[in-house]
Amino acid sequence: MSSCSIPNNGEEVCVTGAGGFIGSWVVKELLLRGYRVRGTARDPTDAKNAHMLALDGAHERLTLCRADVLDYASLRAAFQGCHGVFHVASPVSNDPQELVPVAVEGTRDVINAAADEGARRVVFTSSYGAVHMNPNRSPDAVLDETCWSDYDFCKNTDNLYCCAKMMAEITATEQAALRGLQLAVVVPCMTMGPMLQQELNFSSNHVARYLMGTKKSYPNAVAAYVDVRDVARAHVLAYERPGAQGRYLCIGTVLHRAQLIAMLRELFPQYPVTAKCEDDGKPMAKPYKFSNQRLKDLGLEFTPLQKSLYEAVVCMQKKGHLPVIQQQQCAVQTCKIRTIGGDMISQMQINKA
Image 1 (cartoon, rainbow, N blue to C red):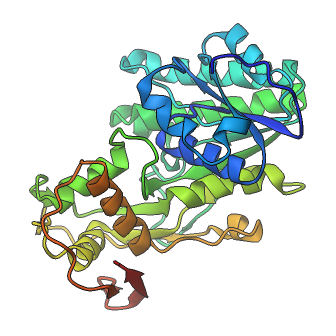
Image 2 (cartoon, one colour; image 1 turned 180 degrees about the vertical axis):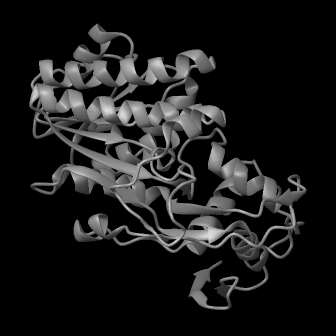
């Protein structure tokens, strides 16, 4: 399982951080499309990576490789013979002083190792945190691929993860240009949907806390959301489409937190969903405009958030992270959620059978 010497029958690619929430879905999507996949992990034998070995096609076309983004030799071994690399791994340092340097050096290592091993294309996973954290952006502006977060603002507000992703993305872009690699950058926002791994990830925990009412109030704030399967498809589309390069903003919808709460309450009325808003006397924050047209032009169709939320909760129930309070009563439920101004966001039917 830890060996990286696979015969190259057809196109072979490597995914860093393959065992994570997004990485696992990227691996699954690649396997479904017939690729031979190498997935890097710090410890391929760790039980937390077992879910990848159960994916369709994994037995024949998936190899887990022991690698670390700060271990250049291990990266070269993992990338050997690969046509492309998906750099999904995120910094894992718990030291704020090391977060940015680890992200930058790890990304530089990945780009250089990919180039040294003859890969022709890299898809880099950035973050919405590298795009939207700018207090000076006009509320009427459309958030798109030209937008960047304000580094000093992020640093001064202790949003160091955003700083790390900004600097890592810049490093990937500059280094890929120096080494002559084709680079596409996927920029996902808050990522929702079912988990392949057993461990509870950040966004699922975010939903669970609201659903169970353990988070006593929600903020007067807006956020952007996307389905994890759309993020995985975005990576593969950015890899496969001729001429795809630069940034691709991966946002499905932007909602006030009150609207997210309303969706959860509509879908799962039997749960004690958080009901109180942290009302600081300010006007309710308004969802901003955004463009995901570049990904749509590649052929991506975005999943409705209601579907993502429903399937995320059912997944958490099955994996034991949430109690099944009672059997859902109806086979099909129509979910209508309105914006604060009263405009319809969407209407869909979700099969609960």
